[in-house]
Image (cartoon, rainbow, N blue to C red; front, side, top):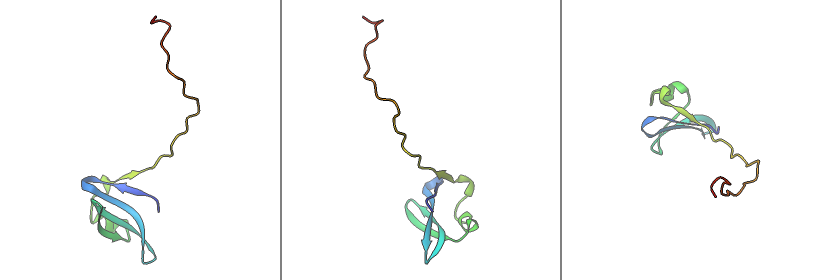
Length: 76
């Protein structure tokens, strides 16, 4: 699971594997709060409406070459 959700007050929820089972790991300021086996369990620790999924966007490659800036012919 490569998904991650962040919330208010330093909360973060990430997917993890514990004892061979997938869990939702709840962290607060980087410290482990709980490994939850259901979304309902996560809701016991924080308000799910406050969570926002973090999406890593791929870097865009420049498709056109960079053109060096020159002075305008209007400003001679």
